[in-house]
Image (cartoon, rainbow over all chains, first blue to last red; front, side, top):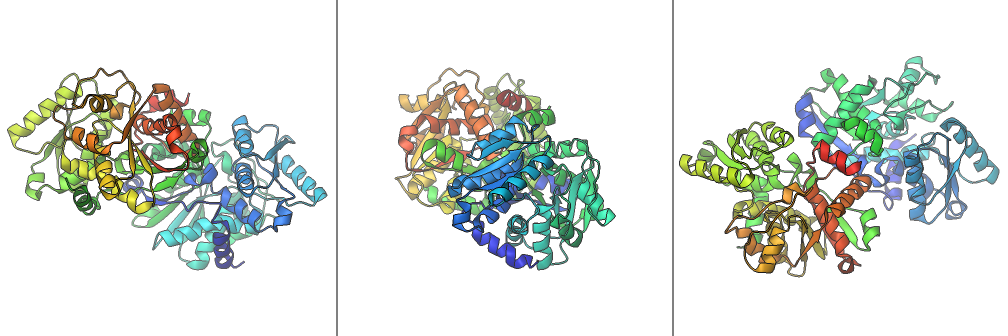
Length: 317
Length: 317
């Protein structure tokens, strides 16, 4: 895939729906690590997460007539809220399938912008299968959270902005769940400059892509609960992100739950912004890679801000 | 005073110590008010408040030899932390007088960057008198939090940045305590364009400058506790900010404590950043001025982010 071309196209396409987010130098984390640390603030993206970029690129690549028949997705998190927001901005309709265990906070975030919510199945995998089935039956598009090159190119616009906002980047730390964000950012930046290191950050409790990389194929791996709900869970069989991660991710770093919490507290105390667990994972990754950081210019992607009040209380108390 | 000149000088002088903060459009607050609402994000300033600007302008206007003999101030809040930070960046020393009732969180923020903390008096007024006394005895500079044109010009750089970042501003909402921020921002913007409305926002529980404006002179006014600790308290006799406020503030809006809390929650939920009570006051001010907002382009200055964990818990719970 020519990421330089597909991401550059996405940048123009999604401009009306997204915000170019700031890159901000952090004195505190620079002092802490001996590196020059910058944060790419996707926590300040509309809907509070980078997911809007991929969704916007997908919806805006559809013919208007197709879009007006509605779209379907499955998600209990940021992807669903981003789809709902983008649809409301475009005056179109859509349905988001969610599992029975989805939290009311998350359902509110999806409903808030107007998308219809349908509850199906005991976990996201089941609601995803149902959503795909209905999409096929009705002949309307299914918007994948990560397993779609158009969505991945949308997420890659984070890398495009970075390259324009900051010179001489040595390394970029990105949280990995399904791998859509790191595939887009890594694909774009590596094709631009193969010397930029791309580090994938994951919770020890849900390290699926890292374990797949080790195994050289998509495998199942047991997952435990994690505060990084945004990156939790397995990877679809045949997911195209696996190949991109093999090609563009230099290394993985796994972090413990208490490291994620500490990272979140430090970020809130010193950068004065909210962040979600998935973003804390990338910051925690820095701590584990101390030896590789000294004297380098490093960007950490803060992928999202959506933290429930209860989780926030648990982190700061 | 020629604010255009003194603020423009300050912009160049303080550039090495401060961060130009973003102006960010808010879809949520725009929808809520029917206006085009932008936030000027001084919560993202180093040390988490605009106070660094005034302090930096003051310190950098001192001859190097004077600076190296140290400076003194009195503050239990953002001004003290900003001074401590600026001194550490400049390799200089200083002492911050604080009252006995100052919270440990705030003392930590001051000590963290290396300034010496001295406890004196039962409230800030007393520590201020003592600090001024010691400064005079030792012949070293006292850095006033607001009653100094050099400090005010530093705060005015917020207005300079705004004018360069955003065209056709109709109104700017600014929280008022001692009046340093609104004097600088109002003085600069009004001299640039007299049609820009400058609205001062204050807690009902501590509305001193608004009451002084009504009385036409600096008066004492009883104050109650407020979540907006950053703007609480009286105004020094002879404070130069009184005259600037008379000249440049078009109107005052007073807000209740529950309005401040609601504003803070809405900002955190929708803009995904932390803010302190004093910043909540300016957002709450929008709600009270609904009739004046429709169709206008309005900037709200988010003056700071320093909220203690306990206050944050109280607001979100």
